[in-house]
Image 1 (cartoon, one colour):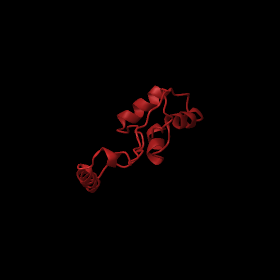
Image 2 (image 1 turned 60 degrees about the horizontal axis):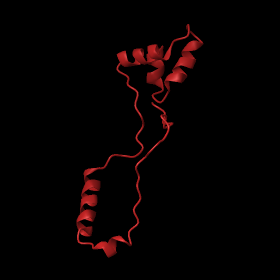
Image 3 (image 1 turned 90 degrees about the vertical axis):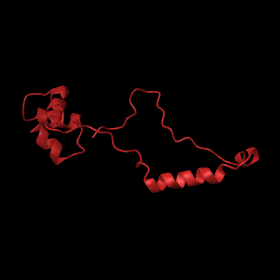
Image 4 (image 1 turned 90 degrees about the horizontal axis):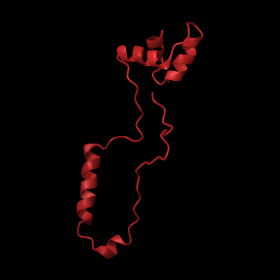
Length: 98
């Protein structure tokens, strides 16, 4: 039942499976659920925050870098940089594993 539930709805969370199974069979701890899913070849994953770079994207970035390689300090003073790195001060970043 656990594996079937996970295969029918691939975005279902472990806590949802635990809640569903609690109504039909004796309560099951999360470790048992994850072990059954692992044995069935199902792994939890975090969804992509953004798509990986394609070869075309990499080439475009490289071309941009080459075109800016001759810039002097005064050119760079007119440029605004943004840092897209994600930092969290909490242990949980609130992303749901699917």
